[in-house]
Amino acid sequence: MSDDFRIEKDRMGEINIPAERKWGTQTGRCLGNFKIGNEKMPMSFINAYAIVKMACARVNSALGLLDPEKANSIEAICERIRNGELNEEFPLSVWQSGSGTQTNMNINEVIAHLTDTHPNDEVNMGQSTNDTFPSAMHIAIYIHAQEKLLPALATMGEVLKELSVRNNDIIKIGRTHLQDATPLSLGQEISGWEDMVRKNIHMLETSLEDIKYLALGGTSVGTGLNTDKNFGKLTAEEISKITGYDFEEANNKFHELTSKDAIVFFHGALKALAANLMKIANDIRWLAGGPRCGIGEIKIPGNEQGSSIMPGKVNPTQCEAVTMVSVQVMGNDASIGYAASLGNLELNTFMPVIIYNVLQSMELLTDSIISFTDNCLSGIEPNKDTIEKYLNDSLMLVTCLTPVIGYDKATEIAGDAYRNGTTLKEEVLKGEYLSEAEFDDLIDHEKMKK
Image (cartoon, rainbow, N blue to C red; front, side, top):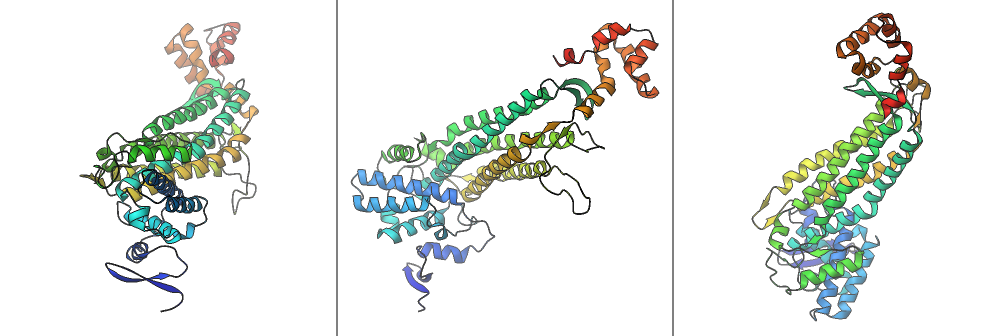
């Protein structure tokens, strides 16, 4: 036998394990049996699983079921996992058992190898993959949302608020159906984007309320077989201490093991965020189009060369990155919803793909929001000359005349101005519909904004 490998045995026979690796037979067999794709179980999820193992060791020790020294050694290795010291020990593909059994055993085996404990009898004491895996899913989602996604969104909201206030006195033409409409201020237009972000924060916070419930204590089918009756409550309390967030024992473990509705609801909030980001990014690239042959009402930062062939071109690349992320999140939502609908009897067996897609959505959204805020939103400036020109040229200002001269006459005036290449004022005075003073009083941009 080469020094590069060691032999480990289980009921299925012998298997060669790379000598430097800390995992055991189940991880080794999984690597051989599931050579599928390049997608690996996310480290943020592995870190959440380490929190589960740490809490379980503490509780089993407190219940007198696990030697305190072994519990302490398990906790120490879990800390090393959380600190990123053992990342290379978790190589498994997402495309494995739908319950995630191989990932649970991967973690059990690594901890056991480094602590002189048994992976099943001690590291996995009082647990099943079926209750630990969904608990780790919820923990990973909750931590990422609280520590990364929500702060990024809050910063984006503040930047948009400042941008809205700074541009509130700049009156511009509005557009509906991509056609000219009545005026509003640039600040008002941006305030719509800001409120989308505020609403998305509220939606995410609301959906996180059900993510805080954990399946621990349910073991294999929800009955709690082979564990203490207080295990779920006690582990939730320990996880709350470890993370600083208030996790709770799920009221009904049968529901928690087989249904992933809380995650579907949460990812629905992510999809709503993606839809709003798509709208904001598209608005910005429409308004920044040009700079001379498009709308061109705002200027965006030129962060890099825009074209390999056209010198001096500035493209809305940050907008494009955000919209691509939004498309990916919407696709992930379809996968998650379908996977969650397939919880058969006492267990959902699509959990690895669910958590992979949720965490990918969260990571992409977080990163793209930070990039979009820093490299685009914070540098937006109004193009005042263009805004003023479009405002004065717009025929839809005629809307303000309809209460005085009526819809039909106003329509005629707008049509004549368009056909003749004249202004509304010229057509109104030519037709003697209003005096110049009356026209100027009605076509007051500031009044229209309000």
